[in-house]
Length: 511
Image 1: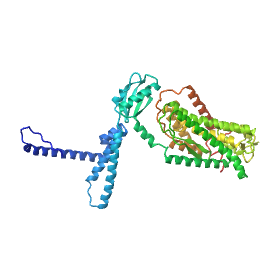
Image 2 (image 1 turned 120 degrees about the vertical axis):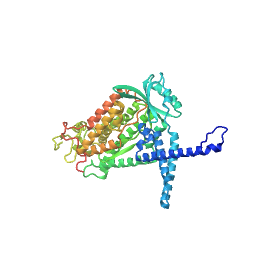
Image 3 (image 1 turned 135 degrees about the vertical axis):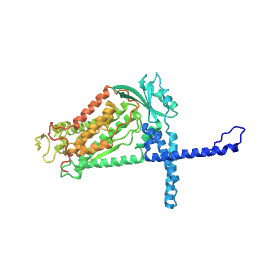
Image 4 (image 1 turned 90 degrees about the vertical axis):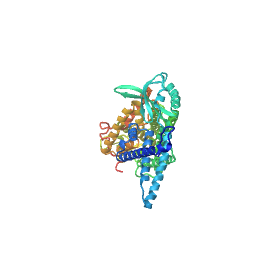
């Protein structure tokens, strides 16, 4: 307890000190009583606490650390007040106290790292020759500066990066975005401490030993499902030699598509300085593989990078699939599949316009629906070269990944082309349609819809430059890829076949 004694210079300390000490002790006891009552009130409702209000009003890491630190202090005080003669209870109390003490030390260290940025100092960094800020508001541990660019963004970013880091006393990251309020579009610069972004990327990082191990396990599993799926298209009396002669080209063709698209994707990401996580293959017993997934583990420089990386994967996969199919037809000299043809059931082709057209070309009997398949063998199926069939499967799988949903390739392209709000609406609509397809009986729609929604849902972190437009050529690429996806997957109720789109896995039959 602090002793306070105030007296004239010529008076005696002995006469004044006791009364002052008594008064101070009474004030201290009263203050402690008020604090205790306040803490008891907080136990009932944390919403009355000022730190909690600050956190809810501005959910930043600094506010969260202060709130957790206060809660830890309260728990330690509660343990100090408890007194028990039971040695077992005392033992557990000591363990809890030690854990809380360590937690408090960690929070104190974190508090020194995560400091909210001084917005006034940051605002002074903006000027008429970079970004002219007219308004500012707190956002997390950083802020949002409303204004407008005064120079090309490529010139502004290096200047502001240096100024903002010096003013903040730490490294910062910032984004240029557009904010729409009351039908008025304004430019905004969002500034955040780099330590917070590093923490966010660290929490979702997949470039870890466990991540690489999982990628290898999924790769081996996918190779197995591709080999297994390949065997479903053999004739009933096939031998091991037939299996090798038919399956190896299909297996090799599928791997070629995956390999080429992966190399092109990583080269494109490296060109933009974007770090990718390990690639995870998605195994499937319907198509062998449902695609390749990876995350961005660094900030994207602009919307062009957000667009180009998924487009590089999709375009290279489509082109490789087309090259494989054309090569197979040229080598065979016909559309009848050659000497080592796989026999594909006609049901595989009546799903959509593109495959229906392919069936009309390659597929001499009339099936149950009255469709004449030129080279088909009754009771067996349509003969297709294994390499050509790998190309057809590659196109279907690529189209599935081009659906505008979440963080699939199509979702990323939609976010780059139309913005975050429109991309979110497209993602919701796609998930809804896949769900309806699943409820209508399509296992593939249900499985892919659940995967896309829950494992690849959400949106990407904004690129550092969300303002610069993509350009007409990129919009043209996006439209072309969207049309191919549409032709490959859209229902074909009025096409060559009248079968509904949403059905059981079409090329598995009764298996």
